[in-house]
Image (cartoon, rainbow over all chains, first blue to last red; front, side, top):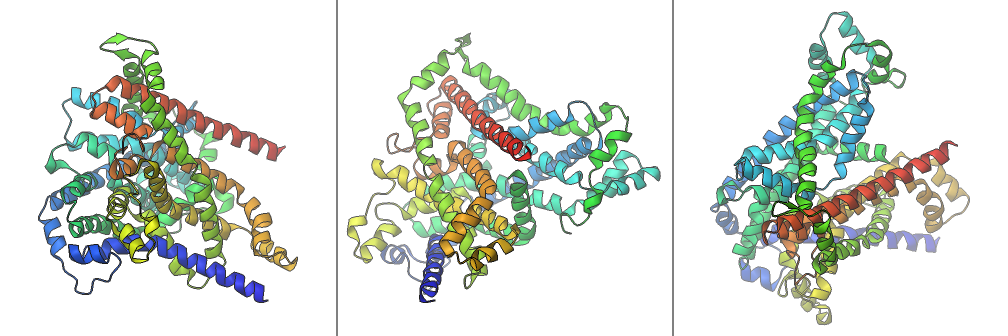
Length: 275
Length: 307
C-alpha cells in the first residue's frame, strides 16, 4: 500500500516536471517581452512586476504589420485554392472507378515523403526562368502543390464513407455530378474540410524554407522569414525579439483554440489509420 | 458535425457502390482531377525531372554520375549526413518519454487535463519561433546559463550552441522538446481507444504499474509506435531545416550541418547548384528507400497476421 502510494507520488512529480519543462521556455518568452533588458538579464525567470509594452511598440513599428499581412495573404490564398482543387480531385477519385485509379492515388500519397528541400533547387531555377522570383504567385503555387497529396488523400478517404444511398437518391432526382458534389458531398464534409483547412493553414504559416528562398525583398517577407533576420538585428534587445516571437505565436494559438476539435481529430484520425 | 456520424457502418463506400454500376467514360473523372494533378505535376513531377537533369549536368554538359560521386566524397556532405543519423539517435528518447507521459495522462493523474494541454504547447509553436527563442536562451550569457549560475551550478554552464562538441546535442534537445507533444497526443489517443478491461485484468492478476505497462500496454501500442517512429525518422532525416537554419546555420564550423542546410547553402550561398542538386538527389533516394522499406515491412507484417 505504501509502495503503491509512493509510486503514485513519484509519477505525479514526474508529470509535473515534464509540464514545467514544457511551459518554462514559453513563459520566458511571454514574460521577457513585457520587461526591460536589464531586468531580464539579471533574473530571466522573474515575474513581469511592472509590465511594459515598449518592446511591442518597437516590434510593430518595424516591418511587422507588412510581414503579418504577407503571411495572411499567402496562407488564405494557398489554403483556399488547395481545398478547392483537392476536394474536386478527391470526388473525381471516389466517384468514378477507372483503370489505374488506385495506382494514381497511392502514387499521390507516396509523394508525401518527399521533403521540400529536394524540390527547391529546380523550382528556383524554373521561377528564375519565368521571372517569378519575389512574387506571391509562385510561392502560392508551390504551397498548393506541396499540400495537395495529403489533402487529396484525406478527402478521398472521407468521401468514400459518404452513404451511397444519398448519392443515388440525388442522381435519381436527375442531379448532375456537379450538383451532387455541391449539394450533397460538400455540405456533408464540413468537419473534414475545416480540419484540413486548419492543418494546412498551420503548415503554411510556419513554413520557412520556401519563403526564405523565393521572397527576397524586405517588404515581401513572411512573418517567419522576417523573424530570422529580426533575431540578428535586435540581437542585443531581447525584449523586442521576445515580443516579435509572441506576436508571431498569437495567431497560431487562436487557430488552435478555434480548430482544436477539428485539429485533434484530423491529427489522430490520420495517424490511427496510418498505424 | 462529427467526422464519422454521417456514415452508418453498414452503409459505407461510394467507391464500392459505383464500381459495379457506373460505366461513365473516365475523361469526366479526369476533368475533376486535372487541377490537382496539374499542381502536383509542376511542383513534384517537373521538379524531380529537372532535379535529375541538374544533378547529372555541369556547365551544360552531361557528366553522368560524376556530380553524385563528388557529393558523396565531399567531407562536408558526409558530416551533414552523419549529423542527420546522429539526430536519429534521439528517437528512442523521444518515444520513451512520450510513452511515459502519455501513460501518466491516461491514468488520470491529478490535473491531467491541464497537463495534457501544457505538454502539447511546445508542438503548437512554429519551429522558427522555437529556434529563435532557444537561440536566445542558450547563448553564453543567456537565460539558461544565468539560471544555472543563480543555482550555483556553475560547472554546468556551457556555450550550448557555440561549442562544437555541444551544439548538435543542444539542437537535438530543442527538437525533442518540441516534437514530444505530438507523440504524447498520438499515444494518448491510442491508449484511449484500447479495450479498457485488459488493464483491469492485469491489475486483478496482481501486476504492478511497470509490469502492467511493459507486458500489456507496450505490445498493444506496437503499430502506433511504429508509425510514429517512421514519421519522426523522416522528420529527423529531412525536415529539420528550420531548426538548424535558425539556431546555428549549420555551425560552428560544420558541427551542426545537416543534409538540408548543406543543399541550401550550396544552392543559394555558395552558388554551386549542381552540387546542391546532386545532394538533393541522394536525399531523395534515401527517403524513398526508407519509405519503401517501411511499406515492405508493413506488408509482410499484415500478411503474416492474415495467414
